[in-house]
Image (cartoon, rainbow over all chains, first blue to last red; front, side, top):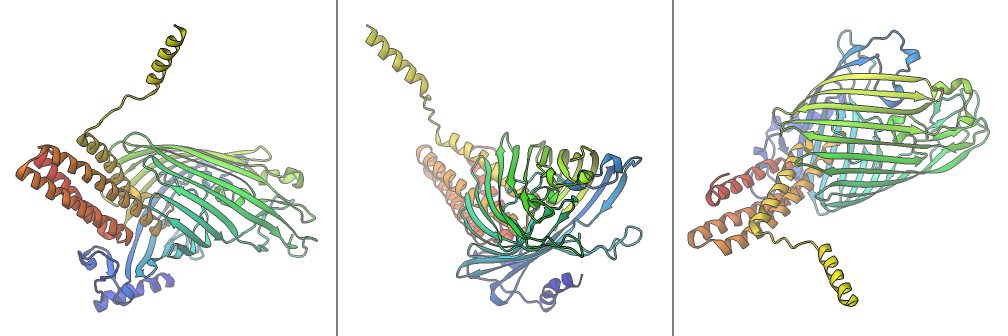
Length: 404
Length: 144
């Protein structure tokens, strides 16, 4: 909270003191930016600062009670007798501050974006729902360089137009240094990103050794032709543990490391009028946390500390149809799976290991006025673990959103 | 005999492989460009709903659509220029060229706005562009 006040304080000060002069360098001559809604131009450094965000309310009925994240869908054996739960949340609301400044290297752009999925220490649904602010993006973009925390270059560039996330979602936000060559219909990126090894130990618990020494390196190409959008990303990463802790009193006796590689392909093809087909597929040995919100590990570690990487893969296919300019629907199916190294896992722990997960989503989204969105979505997902136990969850979500 | 038959068959086969040449006039090509333009404008308007994108990434998408719109307008302007020279005279031609010139000016402005990431100015500029298109359609086509 104090952070958001800190972010807002320059705006409040500027508004109070009536500052703001039109910039001439590197901008169109016509029109005073001060007359444009929602923009305050700072006097110093020709910086334009904008403040925005969104108000979002989601009302979900889940049956049984549980989460739609791939690795957390409740297993049937754990949810016997559960009928469901109505859950309402405004935590997906967002607040951002962004700036742009003309420089001799082009326009420098910076952003800090937050949502309210942060600290829950003081939050409860009984009284105040006082959820904490959480950092999403904080980065600067200048001369082709992106420095800070934001979406990984490995993320799919074509995301689905759904309210709930896709089950195979490749979504990682992390600190990175990226260089991009960006023309307006094609782009190339090279990105050095924060490494984080995730391994399954012999008792099927996911551990993060915190011994990484080399950043994850991602090469990506993007292409934006008139028929749609295409991107392909290739990633190399070093999965390692350096005598990591097994528990509070013991460590692995030796260190180990393995080189992992992964690929992600995203595609959108325009079909009739405004409709499109969306597809993505990813595969990798050591793909781990980049797929399905860490439902799978990058590999496993045996009791001697030896690492063995595991293959994971996923994909989705969706069709988006516009009924008219205000009303649209998406029908999507998605899937994600992994090949666990079962020979290294204790047989009694197999129900802790995710094997595969599949989902379908269908929705109706209505945008009655600009920047506003009302949506209704039905989602269903099935999770299977290595003991072959299954869990099924169904969701009906009603969403109201307004971007300001 | 066989040689002639072979040559004739080959010619028939090759001619069936080639596409008949479709010569579109500049107005038909302008309509094609227009349809593409509607899709780009629609994509630009709905880019705020791109999921899990930061505001700067949404600006990047808007920039891309805006630059494509500017390119499309410039191409359309060339086609209309050809149409005007061929089919219009005197005052009509002058009015037509004036509107076409305005089209080019606004396409260049959109390009500049996009490259400077001044996204808050984009809606107004596209609105102005729409007005020019509408005014031209009403004057020379008789309807919007």
